[in-house]
Length: 364
Ligand code: SF4
View (cartoon, rainbow, N blue to C red):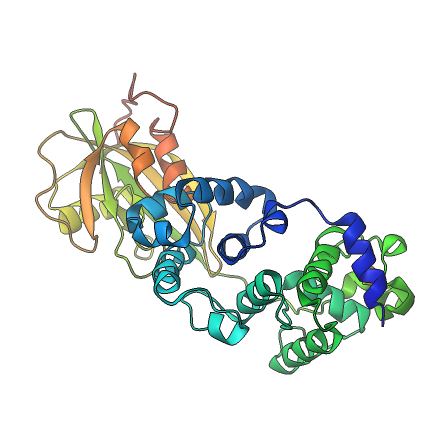
């Protein structure tokens, strides 16, 4: 067993991540939720901003959900932000659990996060398997079975537990993750610098890049949608999605997905009429934004709409709708997709509103 070799490598090579200097449960839990499906460099400023704005879990529990979503804007996978807020309320009432089992009862906390927080913040003897650990373990133990298969996942968790040095689980788990992130990378792993190379099956076999074995899944479907910018008094109409579902609770330019090969202008007219009670005229297609979700690829046409008038009297299928001035955008939770749509209409964070608007006429 290469326990000592890996732990000493970690002591010498660990990146100086701030939660390693502040391993309290709140900071560690926050870092783990933010790091899911997100690069460390991306989430780090968010982690710092959250701790400055809400220094304790009680502060976060008392925050408005819209403020949390707004602070989360750009980090993606927004269900995490809603769960984070719900979890803060639960943690503020019950206190921080010290076991993985206790953490599993907290909203948004799965088996991996439970193991991570319990081991890193409380040094509980709990294993974890994330993408990095999966890569290291499948290579080290030369596991060539389909890595997604439940039997393989069970085996990986058993191995992760079997390797745990009692009383040092926090360092051990972080060491495995760090090795996967910095040495045992998906492409071109640096085996010659790896503390596990002496006992590594994939290194011996000469094909570490082939593992973990993940047969390609079917391509995710292509979906088309459309959204429109409608102005009144220098402000743009924004709509808030329902709390549940994809991008729940976030604000966007109103629109909808296209039905079959429906033309974008017709879909826009229909969406504004049915969902907002507004009669609009699409005057120019400003461009399109492409976004890849986990389960589909969306191409969203962005249009400038004609007409001025009163704010919408109704909204169907949205939880709210309102006119927003550029400087008010920072107060709203806006997805990356919506932010890029807004940039196409000249309504980005740094822009002033509409010095000149396109005048291209579109006939429908
Ligand atoms: S020797 Fe290479 S393949 Fe094996 S664990 Fe180390 S970096 Fe990964």
